[in-house]
Image (cartoon, rainbow, N blue to C red; front, side):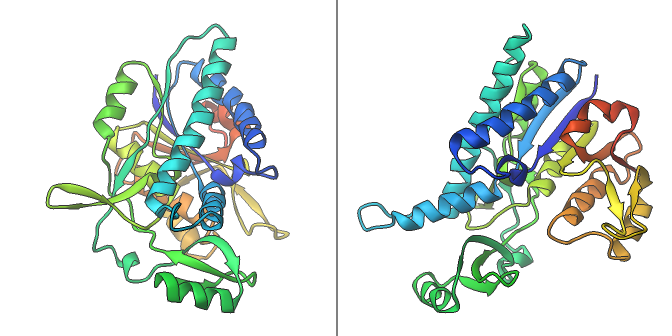
Length: 310
């Protein structure tokens, strides 16, 4: 039996239907694949993205902002979406397992992730969040909150926040205890709530952790055997969408680094997944990182997807 950290994308959860029921239905379908995997005897920790969900929550916060009901901070909104999506995953997995006669307990945990308060991203925020604004609206908002707004993808201006590199899962010992007790654990949602340490205390910060990098830190902290990053395709491709497109099946860390140097992977999508995978397996011959689709999850023991090893 191996210990697996499975990372689900937030964009996969909110595909087309942003309603409560629409997102629950997507997770309900994903739970079937995860339950199949668990019933093969695999230990599983699930983490998930929250990008579009926290973006929608920030819109709601802005719309309701008043002196009596002030908008909440980004760290709090991150925790709120950890709770809501964690509940959806916990509920879906519990029900799916019960339907099979499996009473394995499932728990979701609001997770803090330590970052370095001197991380360079705090001086150069680059992670877009929230709604698209006109130049005039962005300038007005910048006067109010002092934040940085940049043009994003030709669709308008968005607030950008730091995206520091995750360093440690604060609740890692609790996660280990749950796993050792046979509990299917959902944690580090949305990359976890970023906190920095100051005089022995953890302070929440206005920033966003990358979900895939946090999944890598989680996998390291619990000494997982495999990091499985689920995305919208069965394999990583080089020359993607070109006539000579090629699916990658088994590659080494060095080969992955070479493909990165050749600019095969988009910075905002596949690149962080591959960088997280490289960081997890390098210098560890026994570890594997797998990038594939959720439909392919049951086949990872047969080297399905793209397998990255030292």
